[in-house]
Image (tube, rainbow, N blue to C red):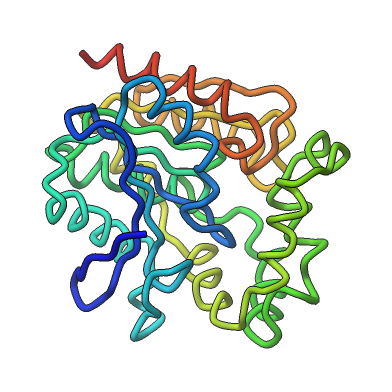
Length: 266
C-alpha cells in the first residue's frame, strides 16, 4: 500500500499496472476496502490498463475522519478529486461499487474535467429508499460494530448465488465485516443520509454506465440500472448471478463491460 496526504487525511491506495496505461480509479463499497477490487484489478491490469484502488477516509487503511461531516458523500467525492490531482492521473475511468458509485456519479457531475467515463455498480443516484429499514442497523453498528450484525450485512452485500456457493471470497469478507469497529456506524450514517444526485446528472457530459446485479438485495433494478441511465443519458447493464457487490462477485463480466465502456469514449 501507498499513502498520500489529502486535505488533512492520510489516504491509502494501491497503484498497479503500466504507468502509461489509461487509469481506472476504483472506489469501494461501505463495509469493504480497496481489496474488493483485487480480482477486477488483476483482469484490467492484465489487459494493459493501470488501476488505482483507494480506501475512503475513515475506512480500510486510510486515516480516521476528524468529524462525521468528513464522511459525507460530498466530502468523499472531493477526496477522490484531490487524489486524482495529487497523483497526476489525468482523466480517469471512475468506477465505484455501491457507496463508491455515489462518489463516482458525483465526480461525473461535479468534476467532468477529471474523468473520461464513469461506471456505477450496484449503486443509486437517489436518496436512500430503505431509510426506515437501514436506520436501526446503522445505529446498532455505531454501538457494537459489525460482529452482531454480520449475517444481515452479508445478505445486503452479496447475492443469493454467491452466498450459496460460499468459498474463500465469502469467508474472507465475512471475517472482515465481523472485525469492523463501531466507527463504521458514522460511515454508514452518511451513506443512508446522502442527498440525491439525480438532477445534477441531467447535464453530465461524461459517459455513464450503470451496472446492476440481478440479485441485488439493496438496490435492485431499476434503482441501480435504469434510473441512473435515465438520469444521466447513459447506458445500463444487468449481471446475472450477482448481488450488491457486483464488482467482487462477477469480476470477469464487469471487466468486460468496463473495457467496452472505456473504448466507446475514445
